[in-house]
Length: 384
Ligand SMILES: [Fe+2]
View 1 (spheres, rainbow, N blue to C red):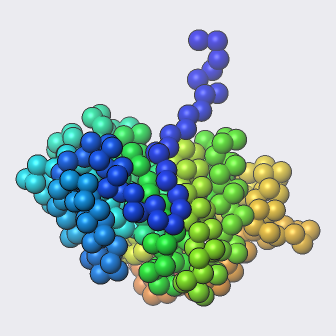
View 2: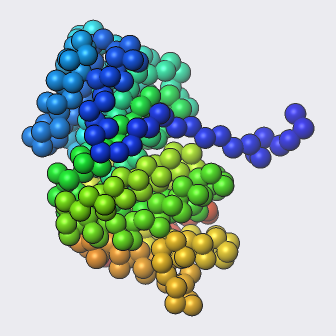
C-alpha cells in the first residue's frame, strides 16, 4: 500500500429515475429486477393521498403480486419494523417497494435488514453492522428532504429507551429511486417546510463534515443554492411545479451528499431530542441548525464558509458571521418557530438528551467534538 488509507474516498448511490411520471415505471422496473411478490410499505396518509393504489395496479399489470403493510407511525418504531418483517416472511415476499416519506422508507429498510439477517432490527444499529444484503428495494418518495430514497441510512425509534437508533450500511442503499416531483403536491405547508429544512441540514452538515470531499461538496452546494428560493415557494403554493421539481432535486443532491459524507451534531441532537419527544425530525433539525453552526463555524476554514454564504445568496460583506442568524430567519420564514412547547424539559432531561447525542454515530463527522455541557447550551439556544 503506497498511500495512506485516510486519503481514500468512496461514493455509493442507487439507480435513480427522476422526473414527472417516474412513479408509473415501478411495475416495469420491478419486473426487470425479477420481483415476484412485493411487500409495499407505506403509511395511511400516503394511501389516503391516492399514491398507493396506482402503484399496486401497475405492479399487478406486470404480473407481480402485492401485499400492503401500512401500520407505520411518523418516526417508525422498532416494533412496527418487526411487524413488517413478520408480514414479509408470512407473505413469502421476495422484494420491497416503499411509497411515502422518510418513515415508510426507513421502515422498509429495517424490514429488509431483518428479512435477510434475522434477529431484531435494533441489533443492526451502528455503522456497517448489516452482513447480508437486503431483498431488492424500490423507493418512491412522496416528500422532498429525507434522502432515504438514496442514502445508506435508516433511523428507527428505540421505543424502550425513547431514543432513535441509526443504521448505517452500504446494504441500506435502495436498488432504485423513482423520484417523481408530481408526488410532492399533496404535502401541506407544515410537512413541506419540515422535510425541506431536513434537506438543507443534510447539505450543510455534509458540507462541513470531516468526511466531505469534492464529490459531496458539489452536491451539497447544489442543494444549498436551490433551497432558499424553492422551499418558500413550495410552502406558499403547493402546486408550484417548478419549485417542487427544484426541491425534489435538492433533496436528491443533499441525500447523496450526506449519505457519502455523513452528518454532524445537528442530526445527533435531533435524533436524541426527537426520540425523547417523538417530535418531527425536520422541525428538530430546523431549530438546531443555527445554534449548532454558530459553534461549528469556528472550526471550518473561512474560504469554505465563504462558499457556503455565496451558495445561500448572502452577499453583504459580513457574510460568514451572518450565516447562523440567516438559518434561524429562514426556518422562521417557512413557519418553524423555536420554543414551541418544547421548553418544559427538566434540567436532567436536557443532560440526558445531550449525553445520548454525544454518542450518536453522526457526531463522529462533526467539525469538532462538543462536550455534554456545550450540547446542553445548544439545546437551550434552540428551544428556549
Ligand atoms: Fe435528516
